[in-house]
Image (cartoon, rainbow, N blue to C red; front, side):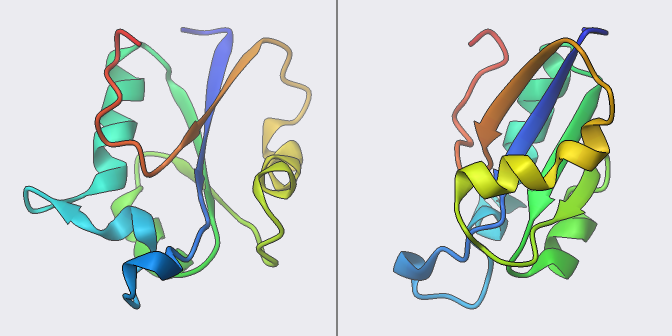
Length: 110
């Protein structure tokens, strides 16, 4: 979809998981859960995907390679994460899908 971009919110620490890994990097069937989200967005025809990274951004950068990475320096919540992506969005005028990186069961049809 040429007039649509997606932002994946993936900056969270995931403290309830009691792990040093960023939440979206936890594996499901041997793959980081964020990969399932990225693949669903691609299958839906969204060509430009921006991932908002924060905690563990180096690990996330490797896993989310097909997307543009923007780092949220201070983890101040979802609205701040979206604001962090403003520069990467530039003068984009179209539909923007904002999706959480910890939703691996999302289907491209949705």
